[in-house]
Image (cartoon, rainbow, N blue to C red):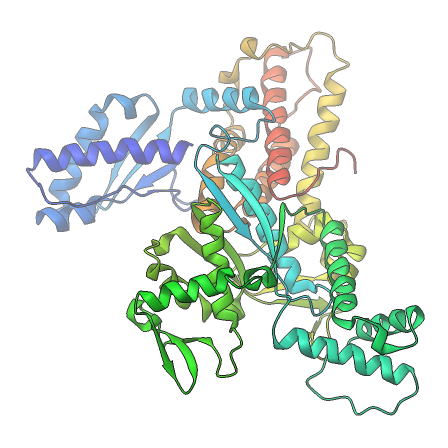
Length: 556
């Protein structure tokens, strides 16, 4: 990882500088290596100077001059950087990566091939990644699809980075929403039997409720002989599993909320007993409350209602403790933005069990809007006004579906443009990437018929790749692992989609600018070097799309 390598080496220089200045305070200073704007003619910049000047209470000019000299003299940095420039007014130090270092990284990418790990597998601990977890009250819609794509891609990226990842779906098979769902099915069943029914506004009204009731009526003419809840849950659960399968996503575990309440000494009862013993529980208006305000929540939360039923919060606390008891040392939840209020309360509860709140990472993703014929389609599961996820998958396919879900940071709202997703134009970002891969593949296939081309990587002379576009392409290729690290730090795969779009853009310019195999007889060595670059692009696109859960297309 080139940026991480640079950061660590610049950090050493800065620490040595602080020692030289006898600055002994704990500073936790870290260099931030950044890619400058295009108008700046360099590969990277470091902007630690003003921070150091403030810490040491000396002028930025003095700091920059001292640090500049130390960077030039540093043995490790001198092996990988060149053209170091101190930019007045002494805020930045700009530099380039040596071509020899870029070439070394290209060789390493080619040597790694399809090994989807940057560290040994399971090196970084056991992670449980919970996503989708939609209430089993209806089919999955496009909003659930976004959470599905984010969770699947993050699981693949974290595995690449050396984590042991388990993907889990949490099924809320209890509570008021399930009761309303069951009653909705009962009323539709009775309507189909010819009864005149007044259908409440807050009941589920989608066509799937009617179809479910029709199926039950075909099965049994006497409603008293049907376990409506069991039949309804099975019907919707199979629908959810089919949608997930259509999106080409597989879960390692399906966890039922109701399992937390089984038995006289159930997990939820153990949790409440422990919290009561620790003094975190009190009774008010016949309800049982948890003092989450002691740990930063904005108000205390109810565990048991006055009627003795558990709240969703109480069951969530038990579920998270269950995860820890199963040996996971990192918990990641992918939730819709409407769960914002649950973040602090869950972390507050975990601290009552002496669990570091940083063990839990909660990613909130914003809503998805469907753009069809330039109009936004609004959705409501309760009213039955939504576009089922299966319809979107059927329309554009699982690959396009997932890629478009991953185009933006989860914190940003997403507009899913159906017309663009269906188009085979360069304006469709996935088509643009797949087209780059297909171009690579056609060149590689054609080169295999040219007998004089060397296949031995050790014989390739990458020094011949000296045009601006070739260097730009190499520089972007070696940023692949850094991009994945950023995805993991920020819990967002959109950095990878943006990386691949830019890679495709650079490659198309390279393809149109540089002759690759046309002049093989007149310049064999250059052809072989450029073919290596093509193979590297092909490899990175394939690996990158795989980490997004997307398959490549060799021909278009």
